[in-house]
Length: 445
Image (cartoon, rainbow, N blue to C red):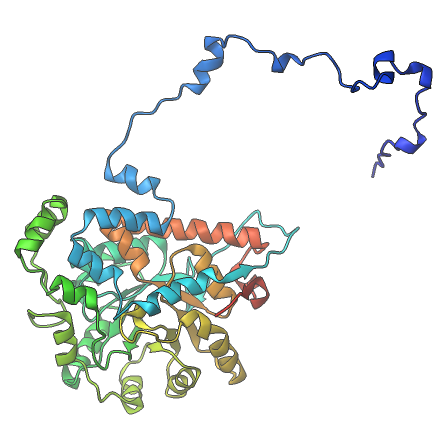
């Protein structure tokens, strides 16, 4: 039964008779009560009142405690910077030339307005999705990153195992410091993808493709934006080499970060697991190995050779998105290589609505994956709302890795998951399929 509660109507309440008004009020004094509530009377506090407030905790300085205190990816970055020598940290943190592209990519996520819906049931938030024919517990995977054990000695092993535990894909880079087989063994129940740089030596590329298939990788991600190396000036200024060289500068830097150097020197030497031993700068390696003659015909060759899902990473125009799908790609990654190649490159987040509309107009079911600039779960939700099927994180997980190894990667994923769930609840959305472009407004480009 519905009960109607009638509010008191001041208009129906009889006005007090003038004779009822105290004389002091008639004289113009305020009608305030002279009685002071007991709660506002001052008194000497009792111990029983203070005891519940005196919850002093023993200070914790362990790595686990520091990771737990980190509430954002930016805070993990702060920890990472304190724990990692400058050259490896800058290799991760930096970008090409003036780093304009990276700044713009991050700013793009800030220059939006969320448009929440209210009075929706958001008691349960479902973050599961499907990508390239298989489920993922979260709409984010780990992007391919090279030289990962240089950032922290657990490297690719930490990344793949954290991804396995989180139920999300992990992508191993051609430039990885753990082999395809070792990563598969470290995360046997994980969903492992392999990222390929096509070399001038096609036989060696074919060998890697065959190894990836044999190791159970279901997706091949070919990167197409590295015809030559970008001008990564932080690396140049730091004299960055692979492996890191012990110079006077690095020895001095090590004095502030002994744990990193201890781990580096007491574990297996840093090498490219998919390559022969190489010593030199990153730019020299890229320029000597990767193929500047790569064309769409090579993509056709890959499509014929690889029987699993094929994804093309490094798409930066609507036209190229359409072309690679026409040449057999099952998915595309809108990416400018984290701003590490061409400075002033297109921003993937800005490009996303146009690409999504174009592929829908073509009746394409190719997956749209986005990376570059993601530093929060809210960024991921915004990308999904504007048409992405999935996202990848590179720096965001590497900050966690540098901050605390495997535990740091776990923490990075936890932060993003919590961000996503909270953002969706506040938008009035309980599952990813409910996100639409109406939930996000781009303020400016």
